[in-house]
Image (cartoon, rainbow, N blue to C red; front, top):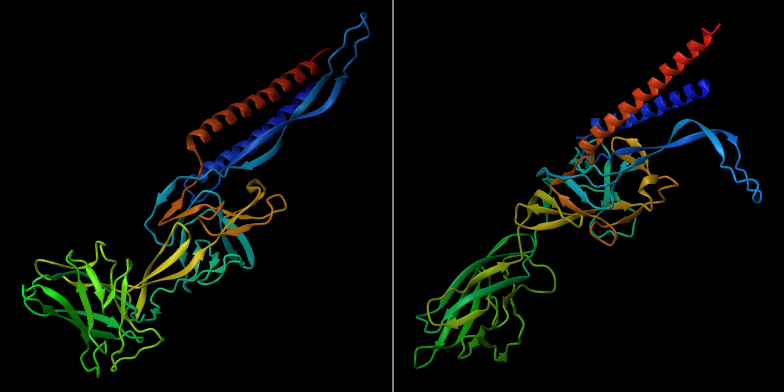
Length: 424
């Protein structure tokens, strides 16, 4: 009996030491971004059955319960807790917090790892990487998300190609009783990103009451051999002040697009579609109107730009990395991939907040953040450790008490054995 009690107490000391090791590791990593806490599960060890169960024999003998004695305790499992940690705002554009189910995929020295640590950075080659040097995987622009993800690159300072202007949107009011032509200037861009200065002149035709009956719109560019349109564009407004016809054709409910017929000859143009000046839908808040008062007609927007450099970037909830250029343009640079598993508990914890897949976890399934079954991302933030210090300190007290109780069993058993040795 004494030997069994010593063995049971020793197993209790060993398992409580494992419990303390786990608690200590959790507490030590309470400030580690993306850290996943662990818990210990125990099971008893049964080594000897003293009496088997006995069956009843009619009315002369009652059934008897089995009797057994255990040999202590063992660690049956250590389990990972994948409850998300708190989201910490950092303001660093390369950082991402995973808000739900999914892991970042990382390639490092030929191995594939998975992590919840979104404290990412750009390395010397512009690769999006973990602090440990792992290359974060995703899809490049145009790459289908059904294909295996590859390393992502963000090259700050690189030159972004210019965009030739395709659409110039007008808006504002033309005076119902004009005192003369209305002019406005704007800048569009050719295929090389060269700024093209454009002057639009709207010349009214007035009736006997001094109100405009129509407007002839023409555009010119200094140095060009021809105006923008071979013939001026004729705009007619109805009695309600809304655009009625353009070039004699009634306007539809949508936007009216007036493609120029003569690209400025002293600039470079590409493609089969010439830039167009657009008149917003009649009745819309941005429509060109003809009401009493002064002129406010102006260019609301145009979609061209000169060449620029990549100045900054941001990561969206859908994992899309969008670059912002000095010319005001933007471009998709890539999409971060997330991996999910049938059984997260089956992942191997290999340190550095890295996990590897196993036969228990199943193979990874890749998908875009925010798609079905995958978490969304929060850019400029990280997911902190999910360690609950209050819980860990409570567990620490329990482990300490159990450890001390097991050592008490050892000293008590030793006293009993000493007593036996001293018997005459």
